[in-house]
Length: 347
Image (cartoon, rainbow, N blue to C red; front, side, top):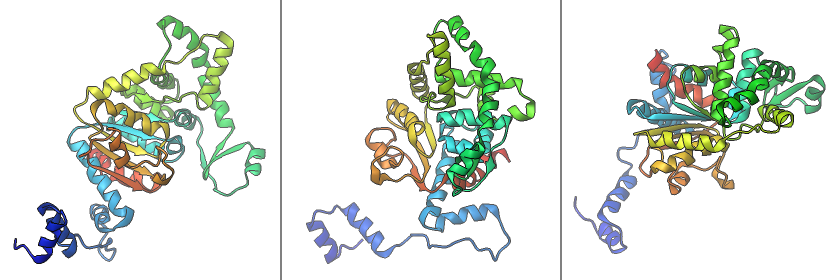
């Protein structure tokens, strides 16, 4: 390539030949895809519709990148972690996560405490669609809790308590038999086994049940942050020596990542579930792939909003790892992601 006077000037300013070549690329925009959306004048084709996100721009292009990275995880047979906040289980995304666990398409999960108990609750009685703006006092007077625009009547918690009563009545004795405290993942696995007592149709709706059946660990380091914590409190008051071994799960997840050739993560939302997976992967110098789907932003310096570049600074994600942060609400994006990746494999 002929060196121009402009190139000589850039060289004198300390730019390398490689940097100058990149500048030329951006000056001409040679090879950059044209912005285009899906052409609905043509007969609808799902694959072409999904592919059109690549040229959509904004978060549409990030979704297309998330799909490509997820397919790469699958192709490379990476060990795939899935992280989810409890609201993901409150919503219809619960059924999509259950699909992935049932068919062993993900290999370990981290879910916040509300997600564990709500998964079981919804196998007993459903939640329903409500509204975002109904006055809180109105719902409180009617005995209904609100999760965004999802209504969770308080009686669901009574059904949950009735279901778990036999389990927690023997929890203390089982710990004594084992001679040590259960880890949170062991307790969740035992709850999955307890769901064998439900009708087949009900239990097979559950993430926790299929995780138990397929020996897929569900990690929940803050398991006491919810109704299960209240039950454990009652057991402690009754017996005085009921414990959970959270360090045992720390060892379990770290041993797990150290045994993997490649690890990837799909992160829905943020919080402790997200960080638990990222932190464990420090022990292998970071994840090999990462897909974030979240509305949390970086400006408040929270871990929930932290982007992949921030994770690289802590060796939670390899510096050359394919990654993307899709800035969108996950009930919009996650079903499309699964339809274009894991769903096509099942089909």
